[in-house]
Image 1: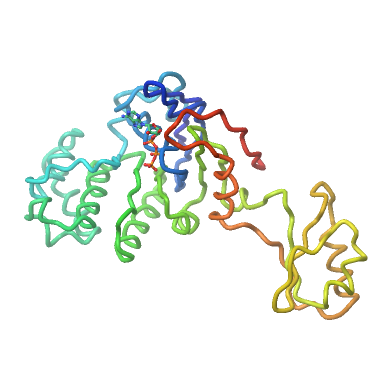
Image 2: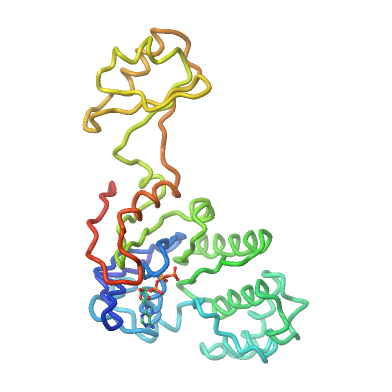
Length: 318
Ligand SMILES: Nc1ncnc2c1ncn2[C@@H]1O[C@H](COP(=O)(O)OP(=O)(O)OP(=O)(O)O)[C@@H](O)[C@H]1O
């Protein structure tokens, strides 16, 4: 399957180092969530992928070859600063954009009809863009990214400001595109949505991707914790010196392995707990994407808009 490879991008705006050694890959058929604080470098990376901005160094390739004008024509892009002509009618606008990508008039009209149907805009085809609500303008913007049948989708905050129904519609479109083999990359600050929708994520801090991987992969943190619903911990935990109590509530104890390098402590914990009484639940505690994000991003003490030192990458299991 094809892949979009972002390799060691650097970019400075004057004295602000927006990107430093930004690297990650988006594979065909996956939805990749691009997350990070304000000013971390997400939009800058996406603009460089599109070629509307040049990197100082590094490169973007598709299928192992540097992205050229021909490939860029095949990208569907939703810019952060939404770029529609307010006085143009929705239908005409989409046909015009498809034609700019070299699609003939009949195919462009069919594509416009298809995407306005899918995105719930069929009734609005003859309305000027400026007469639409912001959420509907955003749907048009997604249609604009899709109308030429792109091979790659790069969407800058496509979900911001959408109502829950529009979020569902857009999520389904992205799933369908990924199922058709398209690599779908989008940035967002809505981490629950990213966790629900994405196959992989890249967490950006101060211009670098500091954690990249499948969400389950990233959640396998070195801090190993278990929740145990069973006998009181004081009756069995002292038998496992490698673990300590982190907290208890409602009869459930959270225990943590003191030395993360030790293997099979979970089996010792379970055996010790069962020996002391019935165990109703024994489960590994995994951080949510929100917790993971806070952990990774909290190392960024410098304000995002000022020059910062290069962060140490967070180790992610292969
Ligand atoms: N045109 C520009 N001129 C000068 N500095 C810029 C410009 N565009 C971005 N920057 C700076 O580059 C850094 C990265 O900005 P970028 O917009 O890529 O971040 P972002 O992760 O997309 O942020 P947000 O989540 O707020 O959209 C920030 O420090 C920003 O202030």
